[in-house]
Image 1 (tube, rainbow, N blue to C red):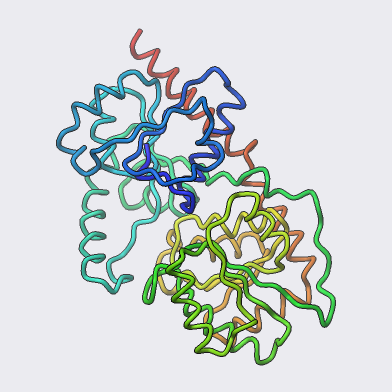
Image 2: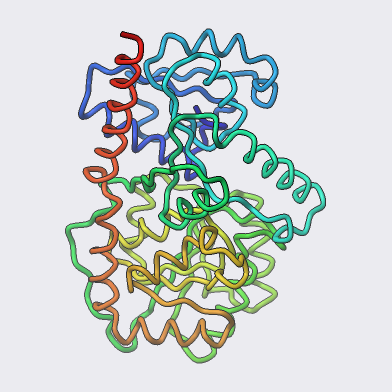
Length: 374
């Protein structure tokens, strides 16, 4: 159960990876994806003809008019709720084993929009009400598990987001030769000025870096048409034409090619619960330079990109334009050391590791339910 199926959304890809693993291990299983919104094209895994997609007209109203959805859910053996609290109510009412996957709890102070602040406050209130209702609560990092256990006193299992097998490239990268173009990559939609993705800040720091590292080039991928139009204006204003390439949404194989053809992943994102793109890049042997969001968020559970880099040793973190440039220099100088650590760390998020954990979770929950019914 997920809010939306979208070709540029991390949660959609996570669900797709889970489905792909489960159907490979259990081809006789029947899997449905229940969602409030559907955007095309469908990503690989969800487009499998063995997967049934059901559009739910209710989302927030599912908290009140839960009976209809609950009756629909009774035919399933297990319910997997990917971070969407309204679905918890009909799931509990159905009496079926259910797992709720939770992500970071955002703080109102991190948002500039009053509407966003109100939404975050209401979501956080709902979290306190909902979090203890499912028997199984799952999250994607150890830092998030520690947060939920401390704040709400509940046991939380950790199953990270699964990275597609495609990204685990068998090819090794090579040292960056002096004088060649060093290609930097960032992936994901831009949420505008004062958002958390901060593409505008990244461009600003890149403009500083170009002055002392003239051989660098920045590729920004996964952008909407509106993103490309607005960011292109900034590129022209900063006199970066020819130094920055802006690209739209990509299929999985296209994104894989981008990871392989670029050298260093960079981001100025302020807070994330998992940040899968960093790990996807790691799987191809790509080091990363990420904004150190730990002081900004005040909580390591919301600083996924920084945590990935610190735990893996596969990149550098920066706080400003100066440390951004220093980080790039360190990685360029010792590229293969970072690349080797990146591939090693990414192995923790492969399908045979995390897919198996999800499979075990489901089988354990269904088995316990059968025992209870007997």
